[in-house]
View 1 (cartoon, rainbow, N blue to C red):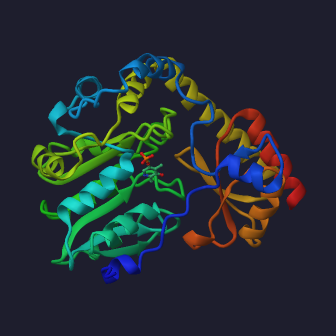
View 2: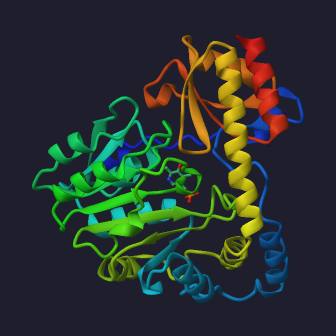
Length: 359
Ligand SMILES: *Cc1c(COP(=O)(O)O)cnc(C)c1O
């Protein structure tokens, strides 16, 4: 068997531990997972209803054009619906961008630490990830612009950045765009944009009609509560979308995902409840961390980092044995930090109690 060198060198993504697995391993129940930035409330009840209704059509192929969701989303975002590409999670859009536009020898600039999928997808396409360190936990756009070379085809900006929760400012983003050629695709991954409270935060969509090639990625996995369904999308210039549509599988978003996402998109009450809960509970968690004398980093997302000033893997293991799953940031280069996402009030309380015991 022959495998390309760049595939042989790949390291698989390690997802957050599923609750069921932890409960099996430790023989415990009622575990709390604050590790994958999921919506703590659950799925939108309207999405669940719509999915039940659609079950009777499962013998049919889905609509490869995703017409209904496409129309509604285009209307809501005020963009031409032909500029939207749906994916099996926004993860698939990252993969499609890499497969469509990259080849061996190409370079892609990305922040580090950031979402690990950028590196994996770029490397899997045979291209070279160029990782630019964060500055004070934030994406360093100035440094990233400096790293652009003749081989650069794409730049990833994760805004807010996972795992640090920081944003770039509109001014910094515009100064960055000024320095980037319109031949380079700038991917704004906005998986957490709905949680942002800081008004200086730019939106990728505002640059869709600029001369620059800005692609905005959004997802139904976080604020819309549908991580298990797998649906997200990218908004981009029509010529970029046209190339991706040649590469993507015709039925890459499944029927239930299409129907569920449309219902969730129309469920304003659920969306607003989610955002309110995340903000209120984030403030609660900040307060608790302060009371415990822990250094934490304020966030614009639904998760944040805490500096434990000791080995985060050990604390992670001890929290696990108490039925609380968080993320140790060792693999992201922060051996003393954990990332915690906001849960329900009782889950956050439980995390705080467990952390107190463990420390
Ligand atoms: C969660 C997340 C996504 C969304 O992934 P899906 O495939 O849509 O579930 C994208 N980017 C980042 C940075 C994320 O954290």
